[in-house]
Length: 268
Ligand code: ADP
Ligand code: MG
Image (cartoon, rainbow, N blue to C red):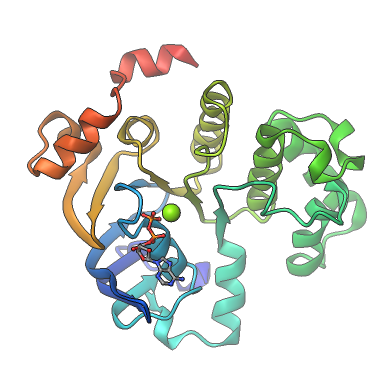
């Protein structure tokens, strides 16, 4: 997939996307957005606005009823086996409920070994183990968790495992759907800091979904605001937050205290 990357082609381009569920005809409609290599795009909106539906469409987990999604300049509608496999490696999701995202029957060691076993068979056992321990350190965990089962860990620890697993294959994009919403507020800041550091250091782009614009502001230079499945506002996060054009965006801003950017930085 990366080989298909051409200069001037954005990493992700969504045009006029619509998704329908049988019970919900307009879960998404007319959604367009773009994300460049290494960029950070926030998707914001209240519950039921279509954020997770958009994430599922990006990952190819729901059928698209109209419009197009291009990854690395290639339309998902034209993907064959090879492209799907590349997508599964290059576009890595992190979901809201970390415990539910981890196989309860597997120890952390096996959970983290699996993606490398499936996608990077050519790496020797020693290299794989080295990668796993280095990523554990980067997400702030020690080797002690390797012998644990997910239910023996805290929510924050489980989300760190999910993030480590997502980063193991050196993805081009992390797609995070409300990654801290299920966690205590005190843990949220830590997990956000981990995501921010990995995003900066690895160069992986970030799609960050949250109902909380303050969190989007911390991580993302660009944002789209969804309401009822449609984009009501889009642009640079700073500009949208400083000068919201749509009353709905103003409501979202009023719903959560937006921490000024400088204060947000010094907090970490
Ligand atoms: P968000 O993530 O912003 O809370 P969702 O994408 O989950 O929003 O949902 C958007 C709309 O689509 C909601 O009205 C929701 O009830 C509906 N919806 C989501 N998933 C399904 C589904 N599997 N079947 C039918 N309707 C769905
Ligand atoms: Mg959701």
